[in-house]
Each structure stands twice: as C-alpha cells, then as structure tokens.
Length: 341
Image (cartoon, rainbow, N blue to C red; front, side, top):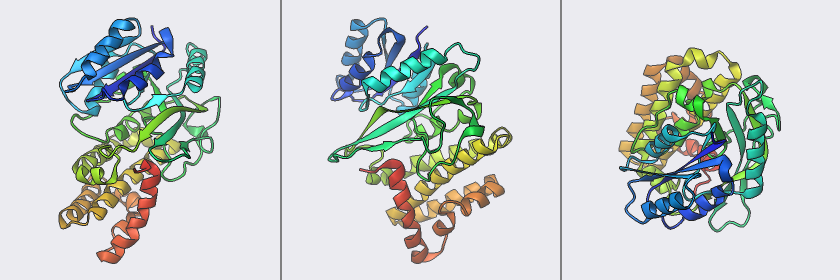
C-alpha cells in the first residue's frame, strides 16, 4: 500500500502540468500520483499517459468526461490506494525538502496508537510579479510537531484558515465521511476542507512551506472579476455549506473548538459571497445577497443571528449605499483569504 496518494485534477493543463508532476515524482515509491484528465481538449491526455507509461508503479492516468474540479477530486478519492490523500492542482507544485519531511512524518505516525486523520502544513502564494512571497502558516493557532485534537486548537486570525493547499487527509476518512463534491462548480475546495472536519479527531502540524500555490493567471477562479462572473457558483457552495452546518449541528457542536472554527469558516465564505455581490453593483446581485441571507434565516435562525452579527454581517445588511460602502471594508479580509490577482 502507498503511503500518500496525490490527485492532480487537469483540464487543458498541458502548458504547466509537467512542473507539478515532476515535483511530486520525487516522493518515489512511497507515493501514487493520480492524474485526472477532466475532458481536456489539448495535449493533457497524452502527457498523462506518457507519465503513466514511464512510471507505472507511481502514476495512474484517469480519463473522464468533463465534470469540473470537484468531479476530478471525487475521481481521485475513488481511485486512491494510499493511506493518506492530497489534492495538488495542476498549475501548482511542491518543494522537495518539506516534501521529504512530510513523508517522513507520515511514515512515523502510521501504525501508532493514535490514528492520524489530518496533517497540516504551510503553503506559499506564488503570485505573478511579486518578489516577496506570502506564506500561510498556522503556528499561532496549532501545536507544532505533535499530535493534537480540536481541544488543543487556538484562535485563528480572520481570513486565515486551513485550505485545500494546507491539508492532507486520511484517505479512509474521506471515503467514510461520504464527501461528494458537486460537478461543474468552482470553489468546491471550500467544501473539501469543511465537510470532513467533524470526522477529524487527531491532527498534526508541520511548520514547513510545502505547497506552492500559483496565482496570477487572468482566467484563474480567484481573480475578482472572474469570481463576480461566477457568483452563482460561489452562492451554490455557500448554501451547501450552510445546509451541512445545519444538518450536522449536533455532531459539530459536540466540540466547542470545532464548532467555533467551522462557524468562523462559514462566516468568511458568506462574507465573501456578500462582498462579491455588492462589488458587482447590480440590482440583480444585490437581490441575490438578500436572498442568500433569507435562505440562511429560514434554514436556522440561531445560525443566521450568529453570522448576521459576525464578521461583517451587520455591515453587509445595513440599508442603502452607506451600508454597502462600509461593508466593502470586508474586502480587505477577502483579499487576505484569496490573495486576489
């Protein structure tokens, strides 16, 4: 059995996917690399097949009809045989030295008395045109180099959360919790790092800059104008997260630290949805903002009240242009979360 499975979702990724795959191959026989060709129309399929032929014991090439990023992640989970699982997007890559530390840590923790459910590490924003790279690290909130539980988690800063780039999950946990990301939808990575959390008991944090998150392409999903154009998909993800929080209220609220973290994460996602709708400055999207908050209110009045007076809920619901002007201050937090290009 492999120690760590990587899923690499690819859609028309021929121009940059080799850098990603080459960085993962350094893990050798301890890893499997599942390249998921999500209905690409360029040379992605050929490149995937070439790697699978060259490294038959490490690389799998999966070809499927286009279903979007979530569908490709689903396929990766379904085909993973490693003890642990990580998603690496095809335009991103990993650094060798932290990679070796992560593999060594996973080896040491496997088969122990406590079962590791989630390993967290830092990621680096590789932003086009910027010499100084922003690092998302967690040593202020998580114990370093030791197994810990939710009870040991400290306070996260607003806009600073465990994202897809940060986490490695136990593969069996992902399968047992039944996570299924929606197809043809952007921003599903927020669901991926949200729904498994009530099943996570034991965690470990390595303060190493492992994952390099490339940001700067004009067509990237976290480009602000692209986000506004795809706002219906952001709202869809937001509502799925609301539904999950409501449906699993008892399980989540059984641990105060877990509940606080998930509430805070839902708060930032709802803030982002609202800010993007406000910044679009159309009557249709302002109505969608009101509809989103009405949806939350009907789903769970208590949850609505907590978010309504949460991060920026009060400001986002003030009437008129004055209220909207105040609420756009929350955009600074959105920028910290996404590091918009």
